[in-house]
Image (tube, rainbow, N blue to C red; front, side, top):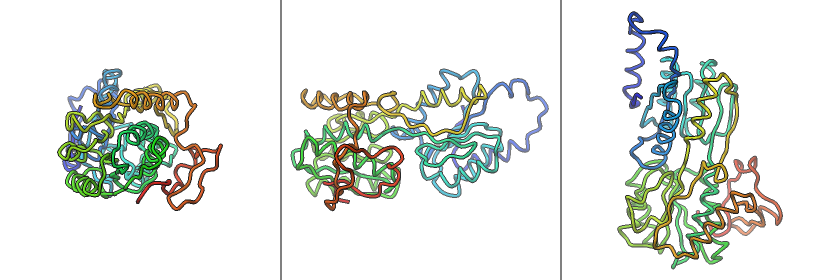
Length: 360
């Protein structure tokens, strides 16, 4: 495995182009499928990027003798990402994963230039003949932790620190608030965006300001544990890990976590390229398939709260509970989903409103 930063991937590409082929065992080179992973942060965030890297490792455990991987870290969602995707394709990578929503325009542009290379865009919403999307139903996990928040809050005020107001994040906010208000109609949710997927200083400042406003439950849709660390310092009821178990950063405040399990998808996806069966697709798995997991519960959570959380998880898995089942009103009081209806998969992406109880 090779780990490259955004800066040195360009140097590596130039160096590779200048290397003579004499002495390279071509048969060996052809045996290995080169797979690239482009990360917005680094695996040591113990969150979003950590989750993707754990998935890559599981894939290597399963297929490692057939695959070699390159990981490019700290690639911003902008023109630099386009250059990284292009360099990886030019270096012979036949499958490239773009693991952040903001890479969309850039990975689509490069995919058109390299029709023989397969690309996959995490949390994306548009495919192409050689570009698939893959996602996880994080909102299902939000429904489980929202239930815990609604039952454990003492102030009835929770907070959600978001990265950007994109559909994926709005889904999480709404799912969390709906679930919390089902078990506690007095629950309100304050939303703050920090305009970044990973900015520990901003996330920590937001957490402090929200706690000063009476918030005692915080969850975040950013990549690191900064908000949880503030929750630990201030001694509030707690918060939730995002993408991975973050209990090591806040052993008292960390109530549980939504854990992303990308391994099965990466194994299946890479295997399909090896088999020559890869096709354009859009994959969106969740709790039922094990792609979204709920971490261990903190021992301070009462048994009846754990039981209710498990009940919600089980109902989502067996299909008897939909996190966005009507009736639902938005935060202006207007009905958005009638009783007996749900927001289906196709409608999710157009939701630009917040449910009742959300202050955004």
